[in-house]
Length: 357
Image (cartoon, rainbow, N blue to C red; front, side):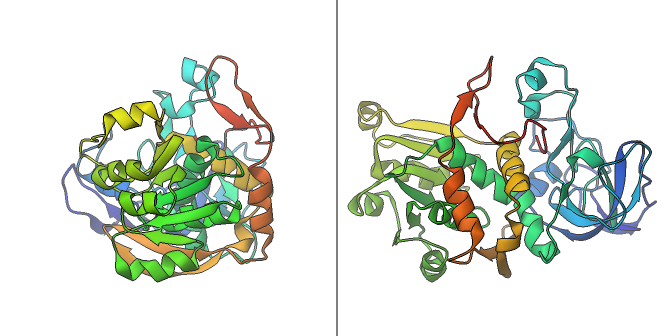
């Protein structure tokens, strides 16, 4: 089969013929129909992730396709199933972090494109229990970004725990931010887009923004926000939005940057009891579990609208009267509870089965 192979850290990607994989016990073989590009692929190539990764390596952690073979012991999936695969496929299940429901910290976790070969290839193997069925009618290229960008953003929104009366702002209208706008609007919140790019203002309004501003001062002038979802890769831009964060507000770091994060007005920040939070790859399990449970993919339609910085920017438009809007709105109002031994909040109706780390 053909695959994009990274020969070594800092090496140039090479499209070459390699041996097709065979599924082992509890695994399936997937014919890849779409494999989303994430900037994390660049970080891995450059050796910027603090985890051991063996090279040569085929990357890619936004895979969708059809199952063409199943390994011994697989009973939950069958040939011809349309599936996607998340970042974390498996973990040890017995360490402190697994027992606390945080397999993303497990030292033995198997991550797509890291602990197991990724999806920038014609075929890949995956653990059957990690795969998620795709609804009929959903295009592969629309489903792929949901397995990374989609549930990363959803996780940040859920962990911010917005109340019905609160306002949500999104800074950075790109591969993550364009989804954040839709989720916020679909959940019934007044939504503000923050972007310096004039050419993105029309798209931001189309995707659900009630107001579009260019910076933190503009956000303050618009009345401020109770929750800011920082989907930008600029901490400078994220820090600037604190000028418009309301008292007792929450700034959620969803994008990543090498820049230092500097609070512009420390006194005001402390006086207003602002909170910050960072959401990495592992927190995506909430969205994956939620979306698997309520089966919302069928309501998302869209088209590719551009490409930048290594990410494919996909515009997924949620229809105004779709079931997705009502489902997301309802899911934001369920009871939460504390998982024993941790401070993790989980939605009461999310299945305990760990679908994606």
